[in-house]
Length: 287
Image (cartoon, rainbow, N blue to C red):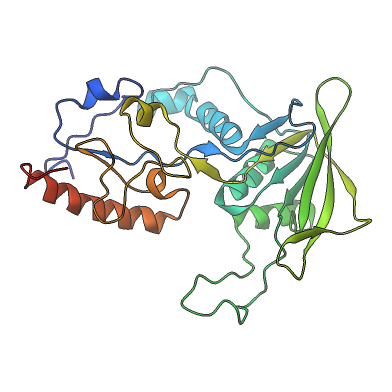
């Protein structure tokens, strides 16, 4: 790609100075992802030991990158400041699934957690497609990822428990989480979740990892560029031109459409490249 003329500038962190950094360019494409996580604002959320998935994973990765051998042999630049969230010897509860939840499961296992439980709000998917989920729609079926397999190998069972709603984080009296209070839920006739009477339960938890997806991009850059946002706080741009409300600035991927799959990121990356090309070849046209 470099031979084709692409200039890769590394070691640069773009923030509120985005206007200054991009002022010399005729077009700017924002592909900054969706990184503001979903919270779980239930009683006890302020307790120590309740963390977002990306905090947990990022500190772990930074510590690995800070390995002196890696820095010396590969030339990595480390931002590691010593912060670390350890799951060693702890009862770990991961709330939420998906790839991020699986990574939290795998990382907890590598730390040497004492127990590991993964809460899923929705019912366990079927082994095969349901009649309501025909091809070519994405198959909503039961899948086992690497983290689930490793947890089952260590603890003897899949760590996932389904149809679980977290109701309260319980503290130990010293400001730390010690358990999660939950209730079973079922989908009622109206299609909404309904709590199952008498199903309350407390799960031991010294570390709770929230892996419930992401809401929208961080707004340091969008605010600096004075971009309009849509109703979900994503950069406002359509799929026809990918143009934002700032002349010369385009947006694509999760920062425009919200958290989604990598196939959509690839699709929008190609589409926005075409639109940038059209724009650069017709600079006299109106924005």
